[in-house]
Image (cartoon, one colour):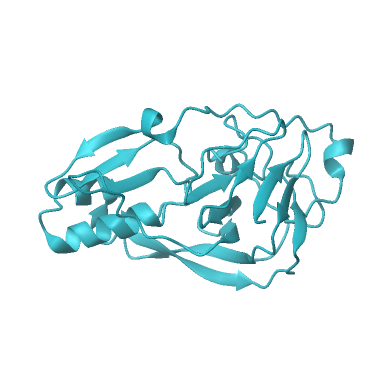
Length: 224
């Protein structure tokens, strides 16, 4: 079974032969795209660091013990629909729960996702809004039609280790494809198509990334 299990004050244990990739966030005009920049070892089961101290990134090497990492899960467990606010657009609406990993895919060459939704009577804007929301690594954004149907793109399960050369930092663990996430106490988080996990160890919204890797200038010490 494919799953990510959070170990108390330890790593993320990934099971089920989930593909693992290394990508960089690359500017393109007013928007951004992902470029694969690293071939990572593949395995049926592997442990990803979440304390930010490993010497074998992105994999855990046990340093969470020596650094006395405290990985208490503080993120809200309310359902997405209860956390999200709705932005009304011309032909589609946008749900936004405010979680941000600062990967910036909500920006497109024709505007950001909020502008595109408001002006979604233009078919191109509608299409671009759906792409922008779908590419949000944090899973923050959902474009819905006027009947409430989710229009976001579905993905095959995979995990992406992000680098952010523009900000000169290492980014979060981006999870795609509705991979179940189990807390250290056995709690099953709400299943989401996408979410971003903290790997710098500094997030105030653990286990999810809240962009503290930018504020703390986190680098995983690899070339990218």
